[in-house]
Image 1 (cartoon, rainbow, N blue to C red):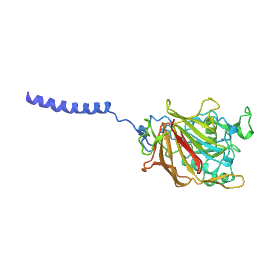
Image 2 (cartoon, helix red, strand yellow):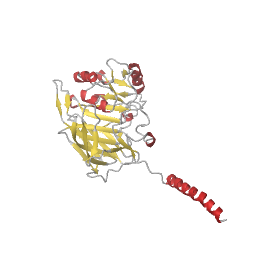
Image 3 (spheres, rainbow, N blue to C red):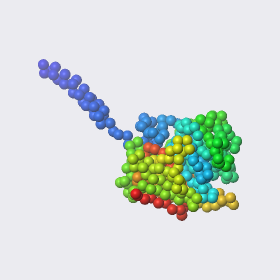
Image 4 (cartoon, rainbow, N blue to C red):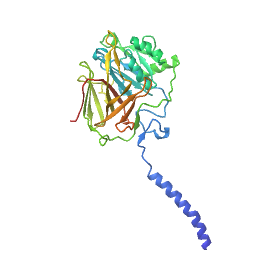
Length: 341
């Protein structure tokens, strides 16, 4: 009888241990905190802003930001948008899309050479309508796959608009994908995304140097100022420009932004037309802003092709909230205001 009990225990005890281990991991599954661009695919399925299971190549579109070109179309679908100064105190934007099916994007305007650096860091196919002399030279020199409205299919003029012709060029993701296929461009990418993302909300409040950020004012020139107002209910920033709500011409809704990265670089005129040169290769300081708080960060970009690296002051690379990001590269000497209500 004792022998049978021992035999039973030898069978039962391991089974109980195994069941206990299984139950522990079922009810104590560790939460996925950070979705890192280097993490295995099975860890990133909850991310909403981009599908990291997809290796489709991003497409970057040069967006006209002359006041007479407003309102824009399709920018809410971009997971990443850069804004930088061009001639005359005007800014232009580079809107980066991935796995989008946006039916109208624009209006589209001509290239400036330093925007190419940000197409490169995202391995994006660069879309524009015309170019500056420097950009015309740099695009082939840098081996950039581009789609140019002066020569390529994929664009149309919206003649229903009461605007000058240069403000009426639009494109769409289906048309661009067709052009990409016809031009034989590589449509997949193994390049890491520029940023790391977090699925659960990141609380910046306790990071060293953080401050409340309900209102952000980024002055580019007397002509252009970009502003944001925090919507605490929806945990996004409502975007305006030069005192006017930045709205989409199709939906009529004001654009919202989850993450803002802002920093300053030196700019100067490079020709009689007033085109600019930006000192965007190097390093400096700025802010990462999300969920009502701003924290100081550092940025560095080692070459035109290299990805910009954003770190906290302790040197750790930042992780941003799951959502779209505007990167505001502002001229040195212009005002930046980050205030609380």
